[in-house]
Every structure is written in C-alpha cells, then in structure tokens.
Length: 388
Image (cartoon, rainbow, N blue to C red; front, side, top):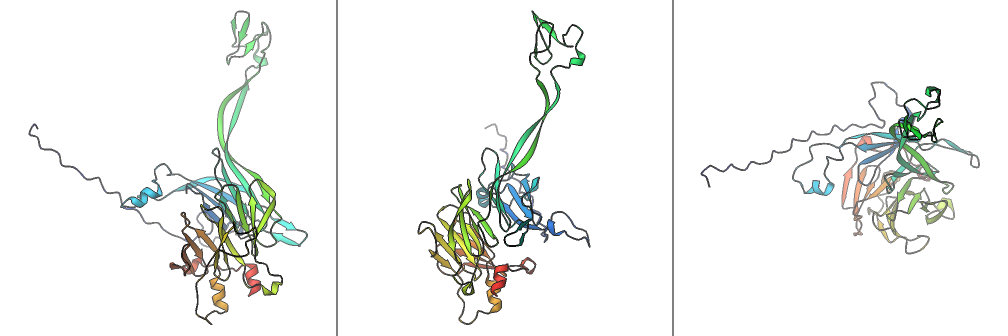
C-alpha cells in the first residue's frame, strides 16, 4: 500500500544432516582395551525397551538388571509424526544410566542336584502406576516382579531446641516472648520458664533416590529352563514358557499358575520338537503365539479350551520333500519371536535369518532378511541338543 516492496518469503532452513551411527558389536558395557579380558558375569544376556521407548532395561549373566532412561525425551517427536516428516531426525536417541539392582542370585536345587545360574534370560516391562516402574525378570527357574520407584530421603540436621544453649532461666536462646509464652525460631511453643512442648526436627534438604523392591516371586512351576516371558494386554496376567510347557500367571498370585500349552509326549523318545519362545498379542488378550525348534509358529486362542492342545493357525516355510537334513533342522530352529505393535505381523529369528510373517495369511513369510555372521548364536538349547 505504501509502495514498499513486500519481503519475499524465506524457506525454513533444512535440518542438519544426520551423522550416521557407528555400529559395533559388543556384549558388555564400556570400552575394552586391546587384550583386556571380559568377565563372564558382565556379558549382557537380555535387553528390553519399555512401550514408550524412553526406558531401557538390560540383564547380564551376573543376575544384575541395569536401567537406562532417555535424556532427549523432551526434544524427540513421536513415531507417528516422524513417519509423516520428509526428513530424518537430526539427533540420535541418547540414554543415560538410571539405576541397577541385583535381581537373581545363584541357587542350588537339592532335589535334582542342579545348580541354577543367576543369568537373566528375559526382562519385560509392565504397566506403570503412580510414577513407579514395574518389571518382570527371570533366570532358568524363577521369575521375579520388581517395583522401581523414586523415594525422597529427608535429611535432619538439628532439633528445634538445643538444651545446652538454654539460659539459666530455662528460656532457650533465640526465643521470643509473646504474652505468657515464648516461641523458638522455628515456631515451637514454650511454657513460661520451661522447655518446649514440641521438639520438631528441622529438615534442611531432600534427596531423591531410586529404590527397587521385589514384590512377588514366581517359582517351582517349570521343570525345564524358562526361555521366555510375556505380558498380557489386560495388565493382569503373563505367561512363562520352557522347552515343553507354557504357564499362565496372575501378577497378584505367585503360588499358582495354569498350564495352557503342553507338548510333552507320553514317551520322551517320541519328542520331535520343543518350544523356543512365546509371546502374547499386543492388543488381543486371548491370543498368543509360540515358536518351535522345527521353525514353525503356532497361533493359539485361549477361548477355545483350558489346555490349548490345538492351534488356530500355523505358520511355517514349506520345503521340498527330502531337503531336510541334520543341519537344516538346526538352522531352522526359531530362537525368538515378536509381534509388531499393531499385531498384524510376527518377526521371527532363526539361526541365519529374520523372517516377517503376516498374521492374516497362511502362506510362508512375506520377507526374509539374512543375519550377519557375527550375530549368529554359538550355542544350542540343552533340550534341542539332546534331541539331535
């Protein structure tokens, strides 16, 4: 209107390019120098993010659980917003040490003359309540339910009266007279010519510390080594699986569980496969999946029967007749499975590959990814080893 040229709109500066991550294979925390030995108890054996991704829990062979929290949680955008953006986030997530606690100790089963290692096999985050975090951790035989919460510790430096400083007439130093009574500097009421009616502590500071308390112990329910635990979406139950059975637990009841899957044959010589992993559906509380050493995944509906002897859906990769051998059975064994967040897909991990399965399709995997040689497992489960 006044003849001045309108300023041209300026484009927002492009985000700085993201520095690529330097991926390194490591089984322990911290840097290790050349030739420095790694202690067996320090090797990480379990790792798990919570649902929001802001907290990370790790377990090691020494029975310890270490918790980390994300430091850039306020700056990061949600996953949905990041997928809509046409550029990558300029910062990588950063985690800092939060706390650690001793979850399991080495035990000895006198009935079976068996040593039970303290190694953490699995960790699962439970629903948070009133700012407290809850976790499930397990070794080969015992599952524990932990509560981790911040507690404020008050420090008391002095009381409201020091008798040694009181004058001869009985009125403490620093007190002021008000009518027929006296008051101490922090408000304590004095009798005329006497001592205070109340001796209250003076709180000078408060410190916040994290405390881990074991709320429940779920034991004596598995004859074989526990290989997986999984929370239910109802927030009240969870499952634990060993080589031959899957048990259903209530978080509030530690002395009773229900056997929902049992693949143990009448004659152990007829055993052809074992359970390697089990996982609840992320949103359907009646659905779970478990994998086997033969490379198959079975979907189970808990509404069908109390003991789920039959599966509602079977996922397996069909092979040509006669192509199976001693080695193909070993590399086909699935070590772990995981549902996607929406529950539509299952990701399975075997010796050499990662396979993605569509829950709504009865065919083979929709995608297969090769696993790097350094990430292939070096050990086989004891039960599977006895079968082959």
